[in-house]
Amino acid sequence: MGKNADSFKQFDKIVFESVEKIDDVTGSVIRRIDVKTTKGVKDFFFEFKTVQPPLPPKGFADQFVKDLKLTDVTSLDQLKWVFDGKKVSSLTKSDFMEVLENANISDEEARKLVKNIDNPTADDLLDLIEANFDEIFQVK
Image (cartoon, rainbow, N blue to C red; front, side):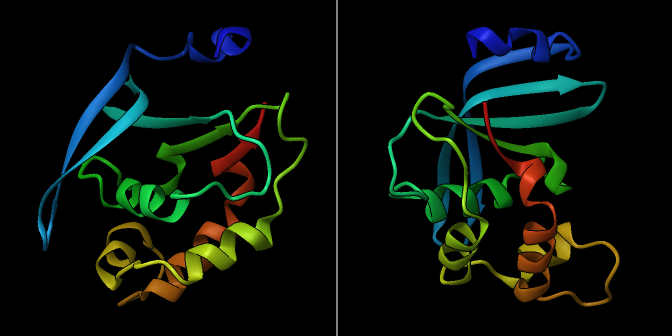
């Protein structure tokens, strides 16, 4: 984050290691967010990954699905996963999408995040994630 500190000047509030509760059918779940920022009334959630390939990293799908379930996430532009450019040169969209296709994404998350389709399904949400992949997942 150090060399990208200027990217955070636009935000009104920055919280490191924010602990967010997710109400899930299995009970209350905790998601620890690396950086939560606020601009106006909208929150943004950053996950920083300093990992070596192979990608996606272990546990990626579970973490990302929890991000989708965050109460304050109402659009995908609020989610930012930033990978360390010293360890990763690029991200292969198909590898990430394959893992997400096998993840436990529900139609409920789709209804919350897919705005332009009546009664969206998890597949519609996956299509939206794929279409916005480069805005959500970045190498810096």
